[in-house]
Image 1 (spheres, rainbow, N blue to C red):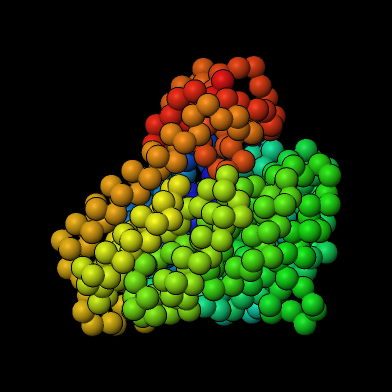
Image 2 (tube, helix red, strand yellow):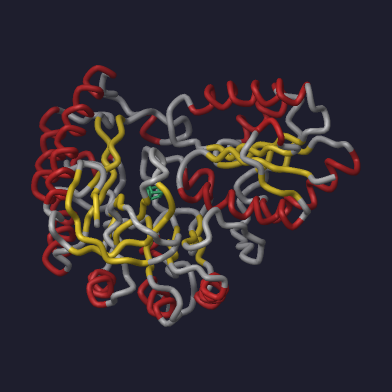
Amino acid sequence: MKQYYHLLTYGCQMNVADSETIAGILEEKGYSYTDELTTADLIFVITCAVRDNAEQKIYGKLGELVKLKESKPHMILGIGGCMTQQDEIAKRIYQRFPGMNIVFGTDNLHKLSQDLDIIIEESKRIMDVHEITGNIYDDLPKTHTERHRAFVNINFGCNNFCTYCIVPHVRGQERSRSIKSIKNEVARLAANGYKEVTLLGQNVNSFGSDSDNDTNFVKLLKNLIEIEEIKRIRFMTSHPKDMSLELIQLVRDEEKMCKHIHLPLQSGSSKILNKMNRKYDQDKYLNLARYIRKEIPQATITTDIIVGFPGETEADFLETLRVVDEIKFDAAYTFAYSKRPGTRAACYENQVSEDEKKSRLYKLIDRVNMYMEISNKSRLGQKISVMVDGTSKKDNEVLSGRSDDNKLVHFRGDYKVGDIIELEVYDYSPHVLWGK
Ligand code: SF4
């Protein structure tokens, strides 16, 4: 009898990429994907540890799944991701939810197939969370969610220990794949009809710095540009302390390099950046962003900003707005700081009140939205290159795609997913361009 799986994936693109590997492993074992929780014979939850209250929310979800399992006792339930890489949490979940068949960590995907055999054949529960080994398992199967563009991990983990971030604690030290292995994977994708790849890492700019070979991110990109069928290359996330001018020049000069740079600012105040352990200051960030604006005027620059970091005064917040006003980001992910247990900043004094954080966040969002709208308005009448992604979520008569500079574009017409077409922008809103 056919067996179905469903994956609930939370958090960032790294988790999406992990879920694609899990899907590949499950399909190799004979499972097929289902959209519906109720028809699934196996459900895995891939968790994120970055948000506040994430643990409580996940408990609610696990409660629902365990209830669903009551009517379907053969169902296999599992949980993995950044949250369960934290020992305490993994143990709590394992004890509190006896209906969960497996609790696994971020570095255990290579054992998942074997673990599943044990669950099925020996009816055992498994807790498989171990210390990050630093090994790279890049021969695991993958099932990509889309047929025309794919995420490709290039490095794992992070060495930066920003004081608010849990990632280095749950994903371990930075380790890079070899250029050869990445190029082989991208060539396989190209042979299967993929046209766009997004290279993923917590800090793609430091790719290769852990290797003895003379390798770096620009060298990797030059290798991938050679693959003829790949028409577009994106990457995320960059770290301002490691982004080289050579990389910006490569994005400027190579047609295949998408004209979009995501450059997390986090704070515009040098004092707060120092407390965040970001290893750059306002000047360094501004000089980098100014250089991108000068060298690639058509590129979009997007960013991440946290408000209300411990010790952030009104004057510090105004420094953030000052940077936003100068760079006029084309889009930004904005967050109010929340304590993440296990990080240094969680113990800092001078935590900012929730009311103050909210008030700063609203001001920031207003400012960011204003520049997003200005950015979209500036595209009116311009010709843009768009890759067709499918129908729009709201209206299936309308098609949707991403421009080279990563703007969401809606349009009508008779196109196939993966087509790269040229459109003229005739209308806009802060979040969408309309093309014809
Ligand atoms: S660079 Fe900083 S914010 Fe990004 S993953 Fe590493 S520690 Fe976290």
